[in-house]
Length: 237
Image (cartoon, rainbow, N blue to C red):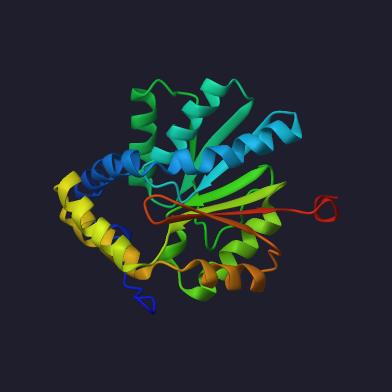
C-alpha cells in the first residue's frame, strides 16, 4: 500500500453489458448506504448554503448510479434549505438507472446529464462541484487536471470525497463487498479501488499543483477523506 496500484476497473469498461452494469450499481447502492457518502458531504454543502443565503446549485460529477445525489437531495429537502442538486456521468446506463431510482424514491425533479468529465467542458453555473469516489479512478495527471477544471468552473466550492489507501481499508472493502453484493464486478472493483486510492498527502500535492491553495481535509469512517476548497473573493469576482 505504499504506492498506488492503478488498474482498469470492470465497471469502467465501455464493453460492459447493461445488465451486468445495473447489477453492479444495485450492489453499490447497498454499500453506499452503509458507508454514508451523503452524510460526509452534506455538512459542507449546508455550510455553503447558509453562508451564501440564496438558492444554490450543486453538481455531482461522475455520479454513477446517483446514490449520493439522491441522498443529498433528501437531506436538502429535510433541511428546507434552497439547494438544487443535479448529477452528471458519461455512462448512459448509469444515467438511465439513476433516473429510474430517483423516480422510485419520489425525486422526479432530480436531473441527470450526460457529460464526459475529463474531456468535456464543466458547466460554470453551479455553486458547488463535487465528486464522490471518482478521484481514485484517475492517473495523477488526470487527477490534477480534474481538480484544476473544477476550481475554474465552480462559483464557490469544490468538494472531493474519496477513499484513503490503507491496508485496513483494503480489508474492509474486500469483506464488505463480498457480504453486501453478489456482483463479481463489485467484488473486484471494491478492493481494487482501495489499491488505486490516494493518500491525503498525495491529494494535497496534486491540489497545490492544480492551483487549489489551502484546501481543508477531514477524515471519515470508513477510511474516507473529504477535501473542501473555496474560491477566494478575488477569484469569484
